[in-house]
Length: 384
Image 1 (cartoon, rainbow, N blue to C red):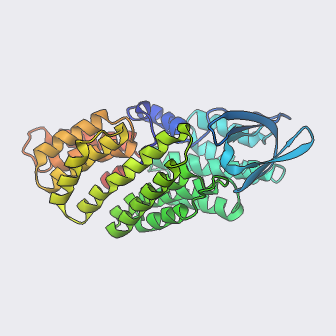
Image 2: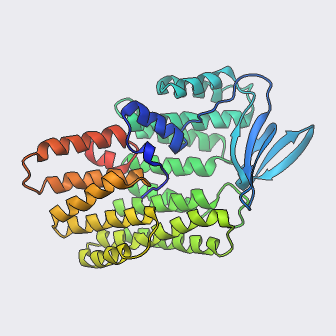
Image 3: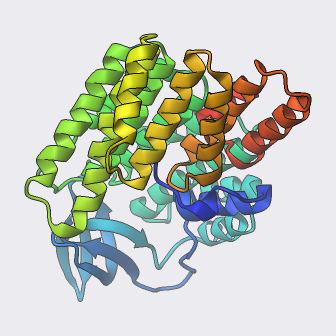
């Protein structure tokens, strides 16, 4: 049920899909800092949504605050206000790693990021970022070439980051990525528990790196993981937690933040239908999703409701009607890679129960599409 993506990231060949992972999934930075005595670039956004870029030298990149030396004076900023840091002075191995990643050479990117992470001459903040990017590159490799990289390797790399940099600003993001890797490694219960623990760290004051976006997204992923683990009660509790947190944040949110918060709230409210499906209450789920589809929904919520309706029809044995709904989601949803992949998986499940003469060929094509374009989704694990 993850919804952070764009249409162009959904339909690409393997090489371009990998680039899309980098661009839209935030796995590896597109712009890289080069060697040399250049200041760091610190990108910030304040509580009113005003973006600003600062120049200086990052001293500490912590969970609560980021310290930057500017004109010989040290200034501190709440970590929640930092959206990105591009380091100006980095080891050559770091620059080489980014160049390899930009070319799609993930094996060498991982190798060089690890060298940079172990460079004792580099600043701790740079070494932490290098370890983070090593994990991200492994994540991209596991998604695009599972024969070369296992999800367990991704988990281990992020374990190393958390052991070495437990108070770094990137810790919440690393934990969320690790939860995702655990889910894709076939450990949904552990993934759910980790995601729930991230949600428990939500900083409603908006000062630390445990911000609304990362915590609510982790909780949504965790709810989906609990459903996969056969634990609908925990999933329902998390969906409720997200809905309440989003509603509370909306009550005093600035205008620029309301869209994302409303989307979280709508997606969380949709979760009850999937819980009903997990509880094998198909008739109730049918009533739920039918009612939702009659409402004025955001695109992400509408596609999620339509996917839920398709799953409901499938559970009720209405394979042809379910096939139509799955086809619509797989072709039209531009909001969620997970939804599209799940819809393709739904088409496979429908085809196995329908007498169509070309079912074998179509099933093979849908499997190939999932494995080629959506290797970073739970659907890929289901068809491997």
